[in-house]
Amino acid sequence: MKNKKSLYWLLAMLLGLSLVVAACGGDEASDTDETDNTTDNTEQNDSTDTNDTSNDSDENQSDSNEPKKGGTMVFGVDSEPEGLFNWAFYGIVTDADIISLFDEGLIEYDENLKPQPNLATWETEDNKTFTFKFKEGVKWHNGDELTVHDWVFALETIAHPDYDGPRYANVQTIEGAEAYRNGEADSISGVEVIDDYTIKITFDKARVNNLTNLWTYPMNRTAFEGIPVAEMSGSDPVRRNPVGLGPYKVENIIPGESVELVPFEDYWNGEPKLDKIIVKVVDRSSVLGALENGEIDFITVHPSMGPQVEKMNNADLVTYPGLAYYYVGFKLGKFDNESLEIVEKYDKYANKNLRKAMYYAIDRETWIDAFFSGYGKPVNRPVPSAHWIAADDSELNTYPYDPEKAKQLLDEAGYVDVNGDGWREDPNGDEFVVKFSHYDVGDPQYEARAKALTQYWNDIGLKTELDMVEVNLYYEMIEKDNPEIEVFYGGWGTGADPDPSALWKSDALWNYTRYDNPESDQLLDDALDIDIVGTSDEKRKDLYVEWQKIVNEDLPMLYITELEETVAVSKRMGGMEFAVSGWNNPVEWYIAE
Image 1 (tube, rainbow, N blue to C red):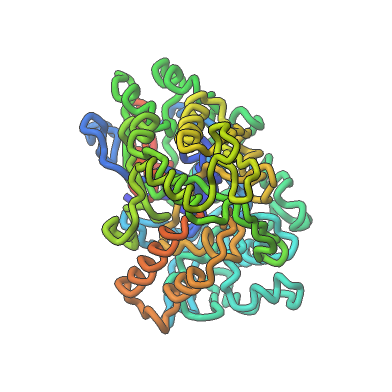
Image 2 (tube, rainbow, N blue to C red):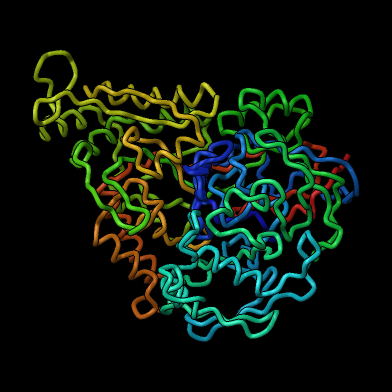
């Protein structure tokens, strides 16, 4: 069964996110954003071994349950949506989850994260020029027929100089996109409409991941008619009356509380079985009670809740491999969103031995066991283990818990206590305080785990202050390099293609640490260059492993953990399936009881 949930939150943040940014969203996934992008990266959860008592099946219902029609499903989210209900504009995982209930793209991804046709097929002979053929007769929720012009509209929106979303990375490699963005052309030269259902996309060069990096979500032209690009993110088609292509359509939105969806009778890929889906915001502190009382039928739960869900009689805990990692990042510079470059370097955390010391100071295994109930494991690279490019730990420094080594590194770097107050000053003898920020979602456990991290640093003589910041404000502050954010906790969900450029290149908006290493940038470019790697996965992996070695040594962030995805599903639900690519098409969901 192919899964429809977008992997793009995850150029997450994600994807996310998670954050979703870290980016953001509801549960851990909401920690991240961005989701996320198919190369969408967003912040989310990652893979670990499934507990023996958990339901590790792809389906939460037995085959004996025949699909039934009717009933209302309550889809829980534990973080308030940001309210950007369009693929081109969303920033957090909560919004992406909601969008996936009523909209879909041209491509979907199978359990091996390989692209499969959904609303369009494609062919290419050189990985530079692709010809796409759209399905005919597919309807938007407003009755319009889907054509290639809707995709052109989306591509031109994202490439427009007034576009304020984060997805330009998914169109910038199309030939002529940069000229269009700079106002030097009236259209994108690499986009050629053949007829209403056929379109040719030419990239600036052949790359192995041109397809998986390409933005493949059309936008309904009628809905956005007359709305300037600069105003789209705040407009009705994004905030209040989104128009999609999925099996359910949005009927009502109560900002911050709920979204109601009803069946779309003209859906192209089967008949929806539910009478209604209500997306309900549930306070994190109330999730377990809402599940136990039958108030919600589905929700992504924090791993720490897993053991309690497993004991419930009316719900199953389902775990499946994730594609995210969680980290502690350092703000190493300031990014200019207009020029897409790092324009200032910060000195406070520039000393690599300082960052290494802070890493050795963390007992990650104990921390993960305490706050994630055995559904996580330490990770030493910004690539989830589920991805085929992941470097083996034998090739990396694993930074085991070693507070004495941490203290030694600080001594050697000149961070010593010069006035006898028990706290280390910086190498100039001035007061040094680690300012650590963590997103606040109203769950006291998040503050507890953040305080645990600060205590590790306090224990090696680094005075640390914690700032808990409201989750949606948090990611805005990170993205805009707010000076109040110095050291921060986040997470990223990776996309179907393992290329991490959108999160790590020095010219990438989502490179939140503002890491700048030309060797790193070059390796990421080479891994996409057909002239260098051809179509060899092995050659690509070799380059990505070399890249992972560099960022494992440089440590612009401290890689903390990767988690299993953990969701709670009511026993009355049927037809729900889960895989590394997410959940299956909601058209298949039904009430079994």
